[in-house]
Image (cartoon, helix red, strand yellow):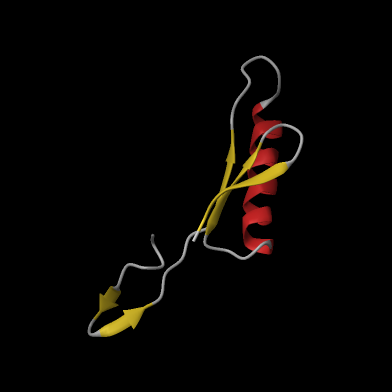
Length: 68
């Protein structure tokens, strides 16, 4: 979606992609630091598996949720 959008500044095309790391909070089950670490792991998974995608850390492993 983002990669397919044309961004321009002063008549110069700027290629833009986005990689996301997502982790759902289990309130009372983990610390904020642990949640952030899982989201960070998911972000690096997105970048390492091709960029321009979103990955979810489900508490056990990272899975791709969206790719373009």
